[in-house]
Image (tube, rainbow, N blue to C red; front, top):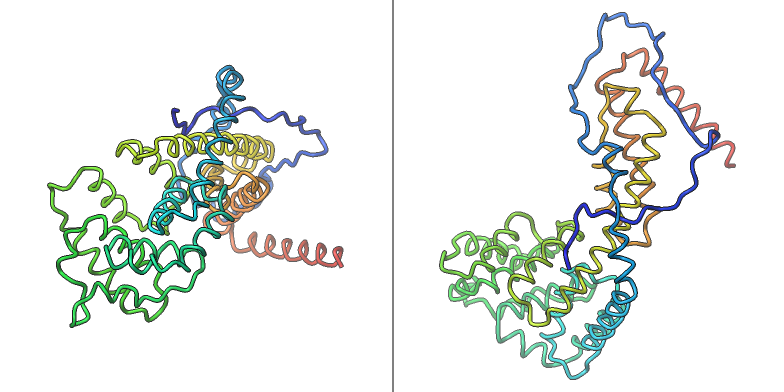
Length: 363
């Protein structure tokens, strides 16, 4: 299934805005300009024009032919993955690896309760400690997954990988997958957890000096990890990258990446519909069009909002964040670039009076 970054979503059937629902804003031509000119930050116009965003259309014929089949496949995959998570005979490390895959591929919201139940079961299993002693990767992976989900795990689990001097064993440096896992785990350190600080330095040193004979897929993973730690990445973009990575390395169960691709495309269509709605609102408000000194950055504001709230059910949150940050950007440019001191004092006073009236009205 092809992944679509800018594929056309279904167009939402929204009622046309009425005259009463519109808000228009224009710059006054009567403002006195005693300085003879205005400052300009020379902001470039947006490349994400309203017409371009509204032109994105879904391949409805493809969707209509495959809709029923895709829903059936999705339901089947959900049950298969859920069954794997709830398999009481599965080895703890198998569960940890599966949870890691699910999270990287952007499927975590479908299995929150199953993951929590599976991790509690693994934590009470003595086999976890035995698995940790077998590999650096197993120790780091189990530590990170458990701590990510709120379980108390001590940094002392890494002591089995350290020598008598308190340093990590040099022989671990050749385990590239283990180094990757150790680096990811080290970023979940609390304050004054010295072992994890040592782990991060140890992992970075060996990952940067990676042998060029290492498998290319591993090299790509190392480069990706060193560019930005896992916990700092936007989940939606991480899912996009991981789906392609899992396909290249021939993941044992190809259905999970395909399920992830299906889920990604569904979410992408929802986000595109939200973006088109925001573009219509922004075009109707007309701030960026009438105030030519400000940044027209609706797309960037929406992208940030999607990073904060990317789940399908959080559409209202995304839209409100987009509106707020778009308006803040405009106001910021008014203060920092265009307005004179007298104008800004008048504007600030007007805002304060507006807030006071709103607060009084709400009481």
